Length: 449
Ligand SMILES: Cc1ncc(COP(=O)(O)O)c(C=O)c1O
Image (cartoon, rainbow, N blue to C red):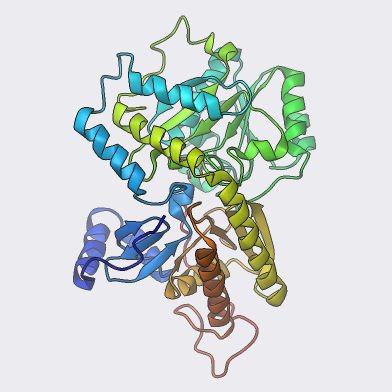
């Protein structure tokens, strides 16, 4: 596949400034300040595959991808064609009626889902999918308690927010839903202490995304599964960021050989064009819905248009062997990241992740935003984790080829040099180049998953 890497529009810095000013006036001025200070004040213009152009003309390799929303790239020609064809004959559809498109997508999801997750409830976004997962767990078990993990991220809707592992997101809105509790991620003993016969479900990301790309110990998920089975508790895996090939497997749970009872997916399912999410679950759990087919409704959830697009996304992943490709590209990325970490231990203290879900842990919090700034100067859009500002998330589209991985690695090296030499807006002006990076406070965080 060849992508438009040449700019096909006239740069318009004045329109960009106007958009930022209007955003500040009519949406949020602090967001504009934060994005400017981290060099992330892009106004997206041309979008193509793994690339995006700022309205002022600069090209970026998109390594944030809206937190893993562009696995098949942006405006993939097949996705765009499927969307056009869908618009020509469909619309949202009538949510109350049965639909051919919903049925077709649910069948395809059942075919690619792990274990015996054969049933689907559609939604529009990730938070909504998690909300339904929790409702189903409570409804089917008739138990109240939901255990999630510290620094876990599941969205900002009602039940999902109640499960958030970060107080800053939750505290202004308390009291939230009752009977939610968190345990440290990766710690089976901590879970064993709190799980009991009142626990409806354990909810976690197989690899924490917003929490700073945290891969749990190899036997953790198996232990969680065993504890759930022992107590008759359901296991909900949130694969909204980790799924659809991101980690070099269809689902991250495959790395750990664990099958959930309920799984959520969203983001990349919409192929960068349409909002859609899905909660997958077993036929056994579906029993709860048989007498209650109208107990959870969403006007736009799994719209006919979105289902047609999502079907094409699944076809692209399968027909282009994108999952295996992500694994191969991931190995190249991680080899380069480990080399950079070995050369710059003052800057990078850890490299972790799987497939094309990589986390670079910097030596201190301030480096996250400062490296975002420097990487932007070198044509890479990369954003530090909201829950861990010292961690840079590198999650390019899965369609990247070797030359794009190499472009990213060169940009990282150049950005590290800029940091070491004290360049950038938040560093003190150095009188001479220094090897130890300047230590300055980070700007306030970018805090969305
Ligand atoms: C793991 C995970 N769950 C849920 C969500 C929420 O998805 P949405 O923003 O579509 O509601 C996100 C978003 O980043 C996520 O990463």
